[in-house]
Length: 446
Ligand SMILES: [Zn+2]
Image (cartoon, rainbow, N blue to C red; front, side):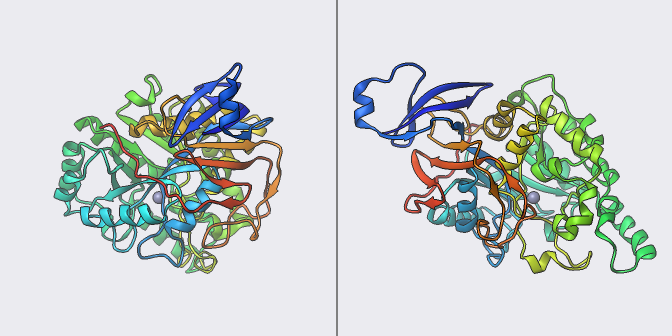
């Protein structure tokens, strides 16, 4: 047994002093008063004194690039980066090579993760214009959701056939997660900026090319379709103030039919950062105005937005450092997402309890994950211990992503994850990993 002793436990809306006993994979007991002597003498004790103990972060949106793009990232490197950042479960997107659009390919991903992942995992199945049977046969208890790119160009996964969308939205028993940007508006904007700027468009125009209008047109369409069919819809990476009017905060996240995600980069960066970071902060959807950024955080706090995630999407530095049209969109984030949010807590923009709610509790509620996301007796012991006064400057030496860079290089985060437990195993301790035990497939109550 392991006893995490005298930590400040951040869980279910409060912070209190306590100790947590782990037995095998699960949380055996939570003590707030005296701890029985036999437990003290029979347990390996890890001091939580002065530190904060949270449920492990559940990131519902990552691209770990395996199979097919393992020069950028793979499940073993990125899951290690995840646990170093306090992330104990992830849900991976289907735009790998081959794309995960069949049950057979999904099964292969689960098998790879079984062998290689330090964190717990699940995988989305990708929708295309012609794989309806595969989508409907994917078990909602095992596959976290159906990913639909509505008007975003990602190979053959752009679903642009309205009959197909109608079918997916009306027939899916699983959660439908959507990337919303209207491709037609984007193409018109590209043509317009090409006319005035030529081929080497300054990246600051990315916010106007992949515009707020393109986002709203697509996400409002998705919401209308979901309302028509009573679909369980999840809006990924919202990036604009305007889209927030589509959301509701009158019911708890677990009862919503339409839920939403914000990503850490949209809460941290705004268009004034393009000058300094250039194409390194080129994302789809784009980083937009300061008003958009501030409105997104407001919506996280007032519960219109349910989940904070990363959209961790690594590319090599040379794939990013290229002229506008050649530079790939996306960037690595999963090692630093908790630190980013805790920095916003230090700046008094959000409470610690709210961060834990949006990064740990609600991903479990929204996806109906079995026995994770909370520090509760009988739940899996997925936990992170955080030192709030251990400054660390992001640099090439401490970046764990396979791609070897971060848009946060040079930034000093004041908090640091010192210990991460996955299913009761201490997999990360002060910079060292125990790679002998692997994570598990998440299961869902659907
Ligand atoms: Zn993504």
